[in-house]
Length: 104
Image 1: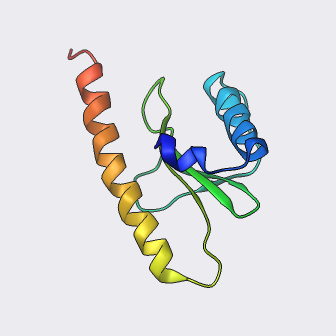
Image 2: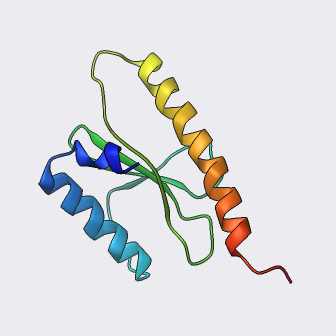
């Protein structure tokens, strides 16, 4: 995940970071789209051609699942590749959250 973000321009990383901090503080953030395919909490931040996919499904936690530069001209093949990676990381996030959450 760190490698996904490290290839982005500083301004884009700063914008995404700021918006995630606002969300974590419970503030409303504009420019968030739903990311379909990983439950109700899948969200996407956009900045130019850059995307950051995360989930807010878990109480008190935001999991960043993927960050990438949109490949113009590649179309659906690229979207499928990103979808698959997001789904894989979402499963890992679910397991991590379950392991960290106390059982009642």
